[in-house]
Structures are given as C-alpha cells and as structure tokens.
Image (cartoon, rainbow, N blue to C red; front, side, top):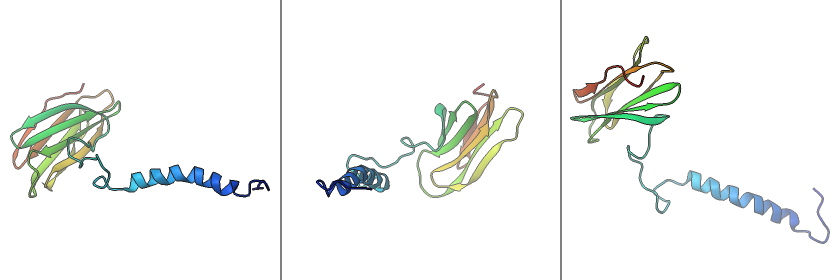
Length: 141
C-alpha cells in the first residue's frame, strides 16, 4: 500500500480507525454478563432455549411446560418452579403421525428442549417434574 509522503502516518491511523470498533465489539461479546453494568443474570424467563415464538405455557404443581413454534418446527421445555437438587423430570413432544421426541432424566432446572418437525401438523406435549405433570391433547394445529 503506497503511502503519501506528506502524510507518512496515514496508514496506521486508518488501520486504528477500522480496528478500534471491531475490538470494542469483540470485548463486549466476550465479556461475561456479570461484568457488564446494567446486565442481568440469565433466568429461565429471560432466555429461551427453543427457537420461535412462545405459543403456550401450561402450569402444573411443580413446574410448567413451555411450548414454542416456528413455521416448520415445534419445541417444548419443562421448567421446574424451584430449581434445586436433581430430581426426575421429563418432556415429550409428538407430532401427529410421528414418534414422540422425549428427554427424561434427573435434572435440577429444566428438561429439554425437544424439537419436532411440525409443518401443518398438530402436536401433543407432556411434561413432568418430580412425578407431577401435565399433558395436552392435539394442539397448535
């Protein structure tokens, strides 16, 4: 890159002008949320693990079953009311005419997400926390 003899420092200034905003953006992306003023800690309500828009939230005694929908997919998550020690949790999502996607085990906060292809299909969802839960009929048709 040829430099102007009257402006010998033009190259480094241009480079600094381009790299400074990129470096600032990189620092903001890599900085933990707890170090950024005004940022809040991530909660289950603030951050979703499913793509799409929230469609239904079905509450039961020990938690809630959250359903999300995009044009092609449906997603479900079971979230405990009180995160704590690991306990049995499960979430299941079945498209009409298909097999259910199941995520079950011992979790402390949530079970899932499970996602199924549901373009032009109804789905059936189930969720449970510590043996108590809920299920739906065919929904999101």
